[in-house]
Image (cartoon, rainbow, N blue to C red):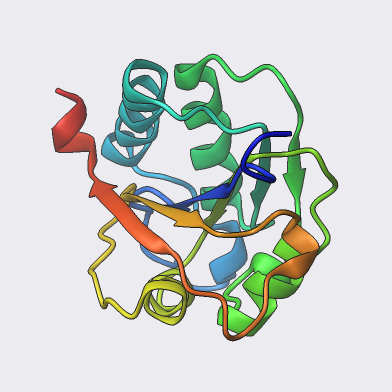
Length: 169
């Protein structure tokens, strides 16, 4: 293969706006608001239009993250499975990276759907840049990796952009 392996692309999608936690109900089961559902679909449409479309989607097991992942995937035209990953629920960068290292090859574009502050912290750890990720925001990081298993604390990528549902309109 000329030039070596193709770099990996990481898409980090923060879940859409969610309902407030109700007394007696847990944080894990908070649903998306109506605007959160619409925003998740808009981000998917933006992915379909601008790319890259993910080869693999991992999401937190929280209801709001699963719903965001499903709506974004539908909007992007992704037909593959969305893999719920319990370690992504409120994960820190080390937990997110551990899940990424287990992504099977040859996935070139992986989308993680999860929560702040872990996603913002991962962007900073991988790029050296601190950027806000409001609800349903999507960050793209291009990584100089041949395999996901090679992701390490010293890995540095390029923040290729942050998009929000407003960009999809």
